[in-house]
Amino acid sequence: MTDFATAFGKRLKLARSTAGLTQTQLGELIGLTRSSVANLEAGRQAASAELAVRAANAVGAGVQWLLTGDAKIALPRDPIDRRALRVIAASLRHAVHDLDVTLGADP
Image (tube, rainbow, N blue to C red; front, side):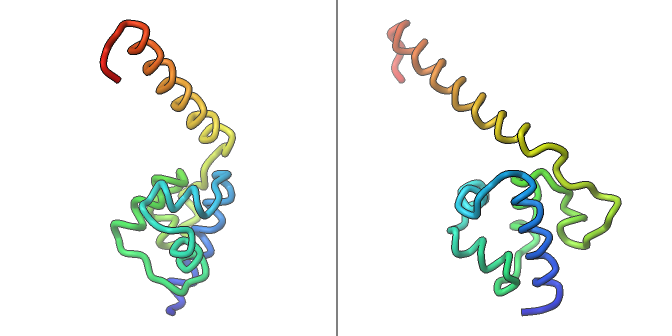
């Protein structure tokens, strides 16, 4: 692929690992398979602008940094926060479901 695709892939891999995500988890968040994420990270597949935005949002990085490597754009601050938020969200979904069942609402 191009130098751009290779550089983008390296930044994506760094941001993904900093965010504490596997390739599979990132793929689920942005609508790709694990192998497609691997191809992006290796620079074998180019990302569209839309995909770059989805990926940046998923890993908590700035789109500009992901696309250009601009050092003024920071990587995710704390991967534990993202993981904790996913656990909290899952717990809330279960609590709401349990409450619906208790109150007799249709799940």
